[in-house]
Image 1 (cartoon, rainbow, N blue to C red):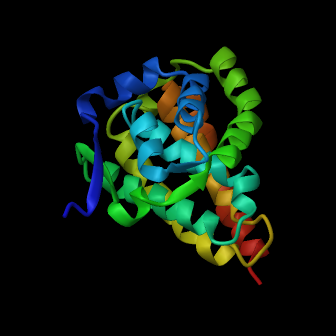
Image 2: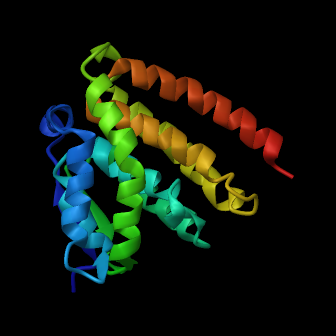
Length: 209
């Protein structure tokens, strides 16, 4: 019995795919996954967005956390765990992106997914209009692997921050920026993400009881 579902991403082509993918196209893929369904498995969502590159795999679960879906208990930690699984694979240069079978089979309400996509669409449309290829040095190799390590640190902050209302959205918001930087290959966004990560760590230190 296969415990893992996989989505193959060639690292040599990953950034190229990210550069060709618009944020709105990723959201449209999520809508396609939910269309005509009452529930959607995480495995199906992974199949829909995984081939679009590593940035999408990092950004989408984190972005869902800052929508109403993130208000469901334990969902932020689950989404952070999913992001961490992808980040570990990216850090080690793995070609096959996978999720454990028990996560692949986990369901999410199609209506809630569609509602989350609608909430994210204005930001995605703004991204498509204003972001693009700039300062490639900050997004080209080995940047994705370095980013993956930083994301693992941010993911580790999410479970304890669930004790503070809305606080888990701080590290997840930074992860969205990192993922968006890889999707758009925009070094300006990457620089912003690194600055935001430093601010996030300071904010977490201030918020922690």
